[in-house]
Image (cartoon, rainbow, N blue to C red; front, side):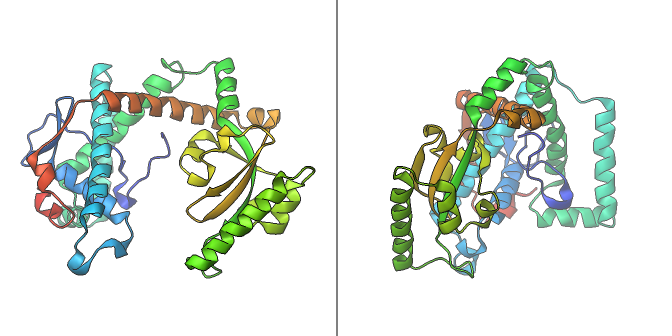
Length: 335
């Protein structure tokens, strides 16, 4: 997660981190996490941020969203708020505080942002456009630093969950695989979705090639060259290295680590097509040549596991304000 957090344009703030500080707020509480409160203005920004990540055509007439879409966005916002509150709470638990230099860094960053928008009025107009109150911006900025502090404290060099060489090599063995795949796209040359009949034919072709690939003596590389329609795989026909976290996030690769080395699996349905996949052995040289990247992946994995554990253990409550807020009225709460 560290260094990979999605950022929101010129705001330069961590869009996955939000936590209520001990300051007074003109906005009512919307979510409570282990006794810590996130108010309605904070929730409003998360709702807007996640709404913007949806396809624009999900909105109905008059910009209204159906109940299912609204529920998805609210669940995403709640998950992000919970994670952010947990981060700040753990920093307090471990005695992690910002240094004077870091506080000065925050002030200078905000000053530059205000100046870039022509002064206070322009800055506030920009925040309003993004459904963000001034104090919510300050909290985002602050908690981006707290996130890094907690990450370094736990999984950085010398941290409680740092990796020895033996542990790192074991992580590599358990979480890296090399694969070849043959994709049968579900879109046409213009990128438009295939119709139902064409989609069935794509599945039938995938099943036929799957049978060929599993036949004794089949040359999978040759089959990639003959049938695959994904340019990235065609450019790397000998195979690409993937991680367990990447596979977990991609439906077509979700079962890669259930395959034995040399085994072929499929037909797997992805968002963009049908896949036939062969798992290969990762060369020993890959670890030595990419050790820094492997270490970063291991740290990210360890930190994510801790966050997930703390999230499962957290006491989370939502208020009536949370229930009332939706994608149409959220800006009423930006105060």
